[in-house]
Length: 449
Image (cartoon, rainbow, N blue to C red; front, side, top):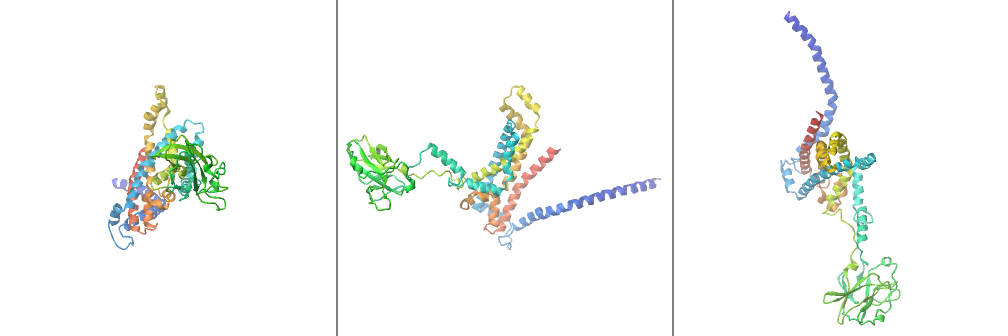
């Protein structure tokens, strides 16, 4: 009886085993294309890059860990490592904070959906387009760069610009000084004297509309024994036929020019030239003075901030990155905020807690898992940033803005032609990214359970 029962059980189990085996084969058949694609696009490049990193630039000579040692001794690569560290510390922190702040604030506005849509729109823009937009926005020339146009407008609103930034003294005709000023008279003058101060280098279009012809003889009005008088004028007659150092017909005064009387190194009197360039330095005691045109008259105009200079290029590129990714952080944190139980918030309000206390002690702790996922995701993304750095940073300061990804590309394909070192950099970048990816995957699994 026992053998018959055993045979019957085996006969019943065989179809089940065959069914399970068939399901496994079917599963493998479905998964196999994905595995092949994963191996071709991920695993093979990783192993190939690791192998290539052990050879020199030509790929013919085995150098072992030589390329990895070169990373520690190459100043440009170390600068890229420093910049990558700045990116990892600054960008995810700012983005997570901005996303949290905007997610909380948008809950309290009527047009929250439209506001979120506007902030999320940059995510639809490619990094190439965003880089071009910000490259133009950061232009040093205020006529092209919108940020410097705003900066110059604000600066000029609160501070007067120089009257004649391109003006200079005509050497050997009464004034002397270095380019850009100040310019002083070659000889001393006394109260009661009058001087003509001729300048050149001012284009006809740069003259104010209020400028009037300068008096032919600045000394004609010298009758005040307690003042020095004279005229500041453009020493260039229409057609170029005038006499240097003399007011010719048609030569105009330079209104708004600041003039000083200096004695013993101290300013004794100041005046501003009138529409025809005349001035009066009054209230002077007897003695010898020099007349000076201070450098403020000739200071170059404010041209804004050098956003793409060596000092600010990395913060400038990070600013562009924030513009693109703030909407992403806000939407993810907003989704987590919507899942917070409202009972806890209402109970805290009924107990007299302020909105700030609710935010710090209830909202943020409950959002901690979401904030962690957003932060780690942004860290992974920041480590791989390439497009914005490569597009926004100009060639002369490219090295100052480089991160590991751009350095890897430049070393391998951008003129360095050292794919051994470039492969070593890619492996370093992979080793930095993998722990963050593993952390995120584990958190996703815990949240799923």
